[in-house]
Length: 297
Ligand code: G3P
Ligand code: CA
Image: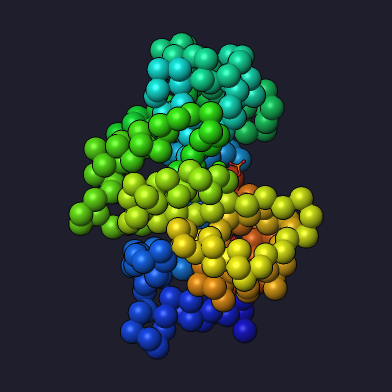
């Protein structure tokens, strides 16, 4: 049996085939039908960040063009309380600025060049249009891509940014991405911080959450830990290089989604799909599309 078929059969089990729940995943007391439109989620990690400077509008555009199911966005907060898309707490790696994001206003951060570093680091993917790109705010991203897109948003360093979760939920509501009659799968919120996720869950229990984990040696997880995560999240994301098939199966047996990060090589994609993951984060969403297509043939 080709891996994809095995995976779909396993997904059907996960999503309740035979129990009248096909197409639904039940977590934390909430069902999320639209999450199961497509069983394997292709998450454009920081946009299509293998090809364009991460967390720029051009990177997200490419992610969308390459048929990523979700745009992944890491959030940091400026001195004046604006949520911006940036992975690091500091400006140094992905802009020509220096220092902590929290020490600068949005106006100051908007002066920075968030694209030239990419051209220097990855000359084979360099483009003139990347030079001078700006750091986008969350609102700018939502304005540009609208409610037709899906967003997989991470609260980064929430302990550094009090009020980050409230601000995020306020914006999502303003842009009609949460609330009555909005498919809950439009937005997934992820974090390494259980406290941040539990806060979001308390503020709005309808938003699907994903707990991120990091392993520096072979991954192991207990039934108790999985049940604890399941109280507020619908799935887990973890570095793919330390997990194995038994780990994936154990997560699935607890009816949790599993989205490893950051998977950029086709061989790794194929292996993870064979093990039964329900999606993955990749800097190369086109490669994952190709692997999914191969598996369907
Ligand atoms: O959010 C999934 C993955 O992106 C977590 O790691 O460091 O790339 O945000 P990081
Ligand atoms: Ca992330």
